[in-house]
Amino acid sequence: MNADTQLCGLDPDSQYVELAVEVFGLLADATRVRIILALRGSEELPVHRLAEIVDKSPAAVSQHLARLRMARIVTTRQDGQRVYYRLANEHASQLVSDAIFQAEHSVANGQVPAHHHKDREEA
Image (cartoon, rainbow, N blue to C red):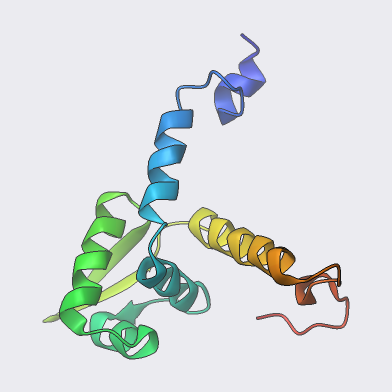
């Protein structure tokens, strides 16, 4: 097997394929996608602020964050009683962005989606 494909796991028979499917399954939830979108533009946010942004109860958001944390998609920092969440790396944000862009293509009806316009503002 080529050492380059071993390192990045992009071979069809890679050991990472099943793990990638698990990541897609974890992200197949609108609240989790919204949480990732909320975190991508900020350094870190506490649960109550994330709950406001995604319009869910803090308890529900905490449960979603626990799953994202177990999958190492988010990390935490505690400051006294408050816990702050941030994305562990840029990859979950990129996955969600690409999924949103693909969704834009799905409804574009032959038009050029907004993310392809050069003059669009960065989100």
